[in-house]
Amino acid sequence: MKLNDIIDRIKLPFRKEKELFSSLYKILGFYPRNIEYYKQALMHKSIRKRNDKGKPLNNERLEFLGDAILDAAVGYIVYRYYEGKREGFLTNTRSKLVSRETLGKLANEMGLGSLLLSASHSTSHNSYVEGNAFEALVGAIYLDRGYEACLQFFERQILGKYINIDKVAFKEVNFKSKLLEWSQKNRVRLEYRMLKQKSDENGSPVFSFQVILEGVESEKGSGYSKKEAQQMASKETLQRLKREPQFIDQIFAAKTARTKMEEEPAMAVPDTEQEQDFMVSRSEESGVRSEDTPAADSSLQGNPAPRSPLPNPQDDEFDLSDLSVKPKEKTREDIIAEAEAAAFAEAEG
Image (cartoon, rainbow, N blue to C red; front, side, top):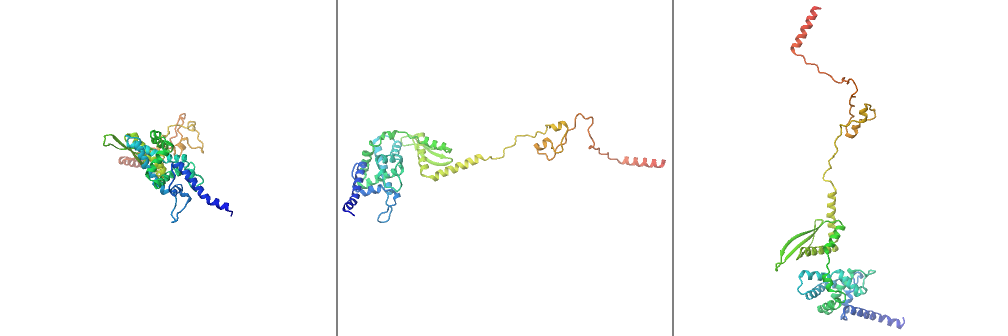
């Protein structure tokens, strides 16, 4: 191997390290003190790397830490920025600033995705992976420089440069509308059940609502108006639908049970047709019937044998051969009289 090739191989790690320092400086606004924290923050679990002790080496632990630090830092920024605003407004604003969607867009705009080490073919347009990396980066900043550096990073590098906090704060996200759209598309029954109404320490009314999907109890929400409470309950429900597939399965199982019960009749539908045995068939009108042709009504009415034809009204006489008169029962006097008559007739003969 030539000397120049050896020198190039030695310089390569230093060149890559220098490029990483330069890229991180553009993102952070300062140079890292301990670059190892940031390397780990950019290491997705899919690369399956382990440290000297055999433990997984990825950004999941830093993501957990960064998530907590980010909530505290952004909460403080929003609290200080919107003096006098109520807790519901502050919570909603912070939630929108640290949402997975917002952090994913931030990471993409800042070029964080291009620095992320992942075994997947591409991490572009994957807000979930990039959003996690952003939280891990905040965790690395906290370990490297402390809480104040995290606070300054978000204020100086994020707000104003990438995010207009006022637009985020006053942008109305209609979670109820989104949940209603989802339920209608999937033909799922949606109900908002009011749990309670109370007053806070200042006498302001506070409402609590719960979302019910196909009879399955879902998330709750509270607010200073019914609309705000339903919005919060809808938001929590949408988040649960995203993170819990078994919850969706439970809802659709309840839907299947309901639709099956609705489709099955509770009892047989009664017949509205009545026997029309007062009608005269054409063959009966003519008085002619074929031996192979049953009476018209027998097939319709379910009679076991065809009825006899009605007599022709043009005939002078009816056949009465099938009629019989029951003989009158003899009395004792009749029997004696008959005996005497028979004896008298025999004597005369």
